Length: 238
Image (cartoon, rainbow, N blue to C red; front, side, top):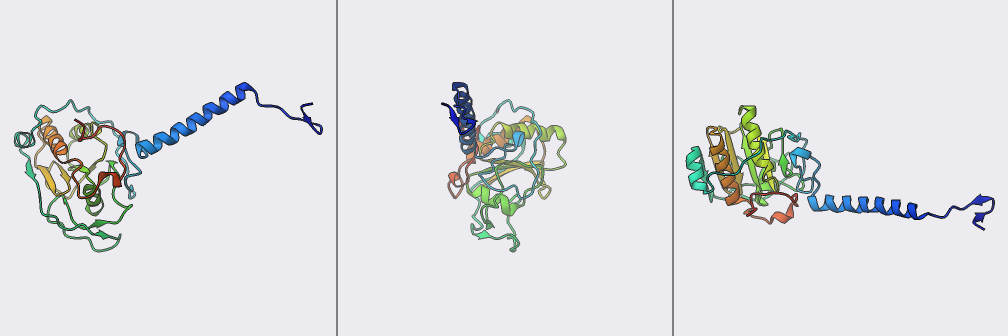
């Protein structure tokens, strides 16, 4: 009994069944979390691998200075206090897909807010990036309702971390990256909308960009669900 030839056949114990069940739960739970989250492999950068591509850029894994919330929520008032310029409802400059290596359009705004853009899946993935993002890559993300926060690389580290803290408070379906091509301390774009802040005004600048995000997050030309976002805080939260 209990032998096959000369080899003893060991029957699974209750403990063995329990250990196997625990491992199965870990595997299933991990797979569910990865699907639900959209693939967050960036830690503090909140990168969503399901929303696009890294395009070889490094994630910004710095821990931001926590954003305490706005003192001014109205976009017009917040922008005026921070001496930022808001441009809304800009003309659409196109929406066709172009391949890598094709001629890139000369966009009419800095930073760009619409126009022909890179084919999927090369749109820039949601998250905080330590390197500048090519406009042709980020515009496709804007088309799907994203808000892209941008700052001058010359902005002091302390202020960059403050902006990172704002991003950390609303990272779902959003991007953050340095932009050396713009003449502003900070800016944010969505599809056909722009806020440009020539000088850093501390909390006032943060409040202005936050108000812009609340006003324009999720209002792209295409559905946001086309590029799955991480489950987490967003500018669209009530």
